[in-house]
Length: 388
Ligand SMILES: Cc1cc2nc3c(=O)[nH]c(=O)nc-3n(C[C@H](O)[C@H](O)[C@H](O)COP(=O)(O)OP(=O)(O)OC[C@H]3O[C@@H](n4cnc5c(N)ncnc54)[C@H](O)[C@@H]3O)c2cc1C
Image (cartoon, rainbow, N blue to C red; front, side, top):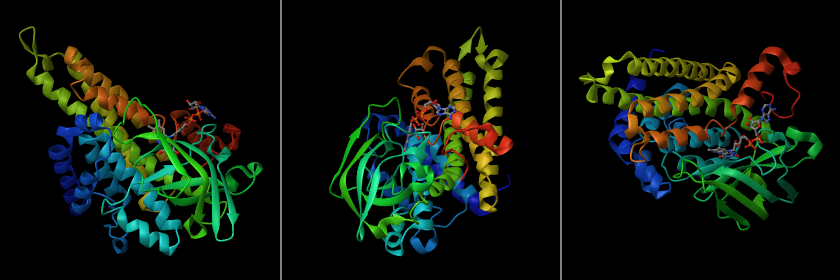
């Protein structure tokens, strides 16, 4: 992939910020366990947030590939800060395409300013992969919808300013065709949240969101009734390629640190880099990361060209988190007993990356999407996972 001069300038700005500002405090943000609003506003001022939001709404309107470059660079310094950029891109794209002018004007410009955190709530206690089976109810009453039910596993559950909520407006039998999306401000009466104790990504926070007779103006509906499922599926094609780059950015950080260590650490009279048993596993990691990176950018290039990219996005969403986890694991082993320490970032990166082996769709579901594209519906019989 050949970058133009604007892309190189933006990538380099993100790289400098990530390595100088984020990397040294990556582990501290895990200890703090909160999303740092001041940091987000600082990133907004530097033009690192909501970069793909259209200029008339305060963004730079850059393409998907350029957004990917920024996500990857930021993840090198902090996987979870990079995730904010990614989720804002996903939610921003859904709002830009589907929201009423009033909702667009109120919420979209806040994303590039670092002034709003938006969460995406689709998963429920009884359905994740089979998202078309969701039951949280939205009942129309005049100019409002009344929402009742529980969402779970929502990232930013307790710090979001608004939730993009997927709710059932149709019957259960209508499955995915009965799902509608809404933008619900987090301060709407009737919303309560609880946070989970997670293995990683403590900065972001993940948990349940309870809706008890939550009254949402009809103008907060995103798109038409029954269109919610296809909207999120289209968004996932984008976020899956970005997630891949996020994971690969974290893996590259561990690789660079491991290479540096192999030049400094001595055993048997010289640096351990001279042992092929040490260098070759890192070379294999570099190769897999480079290959997965190219496929990720290919998916984004297809998106920018307006071409189908569901299959490529699913392939790389299965490949990159797994590859990154394995590569970071190998880097930790390269550091011998130091790699086992909680004082070094490899363990945190491994835990953070593992979350995205599940979040946004598991590897099993990604493989089913590809199988269905190749073998048609004969490949699967499940509801709700067909590429929209
Ligand atoms: C870090 C993290 C962040 C998340 N953030 C969000 C968020 O912000 N918003 C949100 O709504 N959700 C979020 N999720 C939830 C996530 O999208 C779901 O966990 C995911 O879609 C899987 O659903 P599930 O956990 O219910 O697993 P299930 O659907 O119950 O699946 C359980 C296991 O069965 C496998 N499986 C299920 N069906 C099939 C099949 N047909 N073929 C083969 N294997 C199958 C799955 O691969 C999995 O291994 C997040 C999850 C994590 C871990």
